[in-house]
Amino acid sequence: MADSTLDTQENGLDAPPPTPIVEPPVFVWPPRPVAMFKFLFGNPGYFLPLNILYMGLAIISWFLLTPALSSMTTFQWEWIAIVYGRNLGLTFLIFGGLHLRFYTLNAQGTRFMLNRRAPTVGHRRFLFGNQVRENMFWTAGSGVIVWSAYEVVTLWAFANGYIPMLSWEAHPVYFVLLFCAVPMIRDAHFYFVHRLLHYRFLYRTVHQLHHKNVDIGPWSGMSMHPLEHVLYFSGVLLHWVLLSHPLHAIFHVQQTGLAPALGHVGYHKLLIKGDTEVRIGQRYFHYLHHRFFECNYGGDGTVPLDKWFGTWHDGTPESHEFMRARRKQAHGA
Image 1 (cartoon, one colour):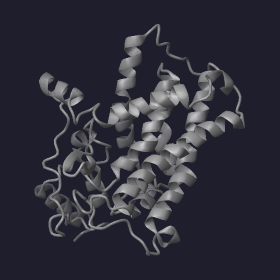
Image 2 (cartoon, rainbow, N blue to C red):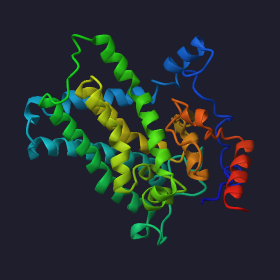
Image 3 (cartoon, one colour):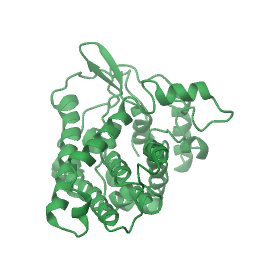
Image 4 (cartoon, rainbow, N blue to C red):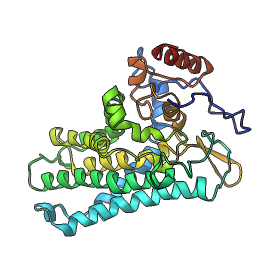
């Protein structure tokens, strides 16, 4: 297990984000309509700034970077290579771009850094003796392949009518609502898959590879065992049984592939134009999972399953102490 002490202030870095982390006012009782509206449409909130960017990227990908559906009735290398090349290119653009800014160029130093140190170099527990190189190997050599395989088979099934396709013209309201709900659906799926991977056998044989990343970086996000990639991207199979459109499936699997870069960036704020601060979503929420392991299994906590199942870590000193005590009890200390 990783050391669970949060050394941010002791190392002279900026203080961590304000705590306690609170659940979004969506799945709460009694309902809080004003707070929910502010969360959904405010900035930062559910749509802004990140989900609206993922949505826009999915729309661009479908209309400009995806071959015509009519060409996908058979598995032909020509269109499969376009899908794979698009996904690989986006991965290097986003994962690599974030790593370049925060770690290679060190553009904001330790300002708003959550890690105690940069990703590890020169340690034999990582392939090639380098954390980033290992992370890139598993991301490009397994993650993007599994992601693209799911997408290719799903598009092929749509093209052949094996999956009924939702019509925008016939059901525009349902089309939009489903498109907007994809991040919540993905968050819930991630919780259950992630919780499964923390059972002893799967953790030791599969998920432990990902948790070698204690001080995380963008490339850590998709550094997983191939079996974990298969489980992680399996949420797109929902579109085989739920009336949807290829655009929904592309959005679902694309966000699944790209969101881990920001989820593991290791910073909770972006500095732009000198001192302008932009919060990078609930990065602290998942960072705490890499520190304590047995908490915060969800993505951003949009669907607060951690809260409902008792695995919520709200980032306060009291939660730190509770997690330490629980870990000592589990190990008989």
